[in-house]
Picture 1 (cartoon, one colour):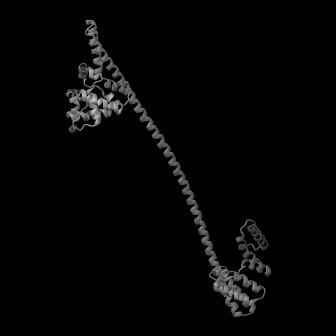
Picture 2 (cartoon, one colour; picture 1 turned 180 degrees about the vertical axis):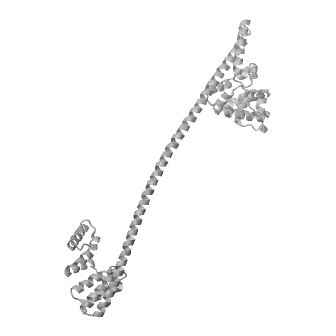
Picture 3 (tube, helix red, strand yellow; picture 1 turned 30 degrees about the horizontal axis):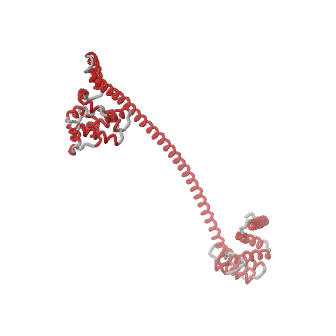
Length: 380
C-alpha cells in the first residue's frame, strides 16, 4: 500500500522460505500472485511469467474457474510482450467469467489498453466509461465491505464485553454459592451438635433419675426382706425396720404419680422383685434399651403373672399399639415414666403422649395423670 515494492518482494520471498522450512508447502503458491503483480508493474515480464507458470502449473480448466483473476495477469503479460490478440482474448475471457466488481474493473481496463494499442477511439471511449463505472462500483463495494468489517468488529468487541460481563457474573454466582454452602454446612453442623447435646442431656437426666429410683427400690426390697426376717427377732428391731420402710415408702412415692401404688408393693414383692423386672430396672438406670429377647421374656412374665390384665390390654377392640401395651405392663409393674422413656428409647414427652392415649382408649380419660390408678384398678 506504501508502494515500497522492494520491501514487498523481500517479505514475500522470506515468507516463501519460511513456509518451505516448516513444511507448509501448500502455502507457498499463495505468495505468487503478489510477486506476479509486482513484476508486471515493473515490466519484468520474464520473472512475472516464471511465477505465473509456477502458480498455474497444470493450466487446467478447473484452475481458471477457481482463479478467474489469473486472466488479468495473462492479459497484462501479453500486452507487455505486445501479443495484443492474446491479451484481448484473456480480458474478454475474464469479463465473461467475472462476478466481482474488481474483476470487471480489471477486464475493462485491459480492453481499454488493448484498443489504445489498436487505435480504435470508439472502443477506447466505451471501455473507459465502463472502467469508470466498474471502478465506482468497486470503490462502493470496498466501502460497504469496510463498513461491514467495522460493524463486525464492533459486534465482536460488544460480544467480548458481554462475555466478560457474564464471566464476572458467573464468578460472583460461584462465590455466592460457595458462601451459601459454607453457611449451610456450618448451620447444619451446629444444629446437629445442638440436638446431639440435647439428647445426651436427656439421657443423663434419665440416667440420674432412674438410678436414684432403682437404688431406692433395691433398698426398699432389702428393708422389706429384713422386716420379714425381723418378725422372728426383737420388737425394737421390728419397729426400727418398719420406720425405715415408712421413710422409703414416702421417698418412693415422690416418683409415682399415684402415691397409693407403693402400698401395694408389699403384697406383690415376689413379682416386683423378679429377675426380669430387676434387669429392666437396671437397664433403665443405665439408659440402655432391652434386647428383643428380654422384651419377649418380659411379656411372657406379664402374661403368666398378670394373666387377666394382660388379656384385657391385648383385646383387639381397644386397638392398643405394641408400644402402648408395653407402657401398660411397665406401668403395672411400677416402672416410672423416665424409666419407660429410657427402655423404649423415646422422649419423656412421647411417654406422656402414649400414657394419655392409653388412658383415653382404656378408661375414656384424656389426661395421663390418672393412668397409674386406673391401671392398678384392673384385675391382675
